[in-house]
Image 1 (tube, rainbow, N blue to C red):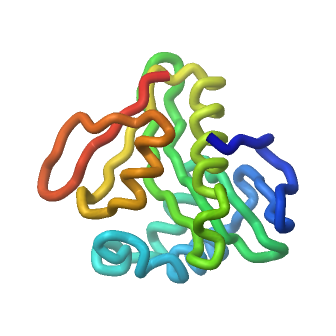
Image 2 (cartoon, rainbow, N blue to C red; image 1 turned 90 degrees about the vertical axis):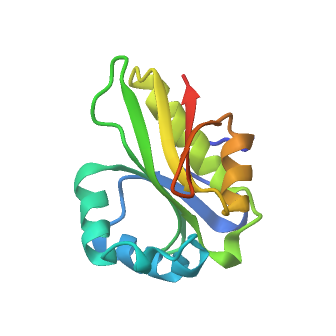
Image 3 (cartoon, rainbow, N blue to C red; image 1 turned 45 degrees about the vertical axis):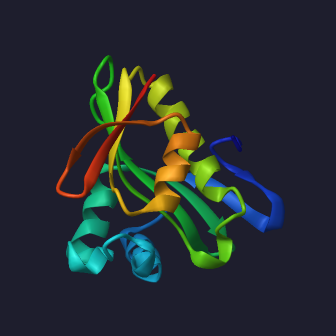
Length: 157
């Protein structure tokens, strides 16, 4: 598993940060990654509203290439001490896929959840999204429930 500090500069000039992205940067990033979601994000939600919700209520683990947000894990880590955190979004722009960014961002998210005292972290993923499933399994998540094409996956902390 790739790991790194919560804020650092990594190979290729990619910098990792937490909660730096404004909702506009999140929205732009999600739009650029839209075709990678299964099904595409724009078919399921209003992207500007979702970006604003993420910025207001989630902790964001970010990868930056200069001034461009190129990777994002957004998680609701609002009620620690034995409860469950929830990863709401994971995305890395196509040009940066395969470079370990998604693993580093997931690692940072999991580490933060552990530090805050969460008992587990969960997410939902479409069963047809093989690359996302591989990422989550590499990071220790296991499938628990399937419903309507979605798998709920959890990781005990």
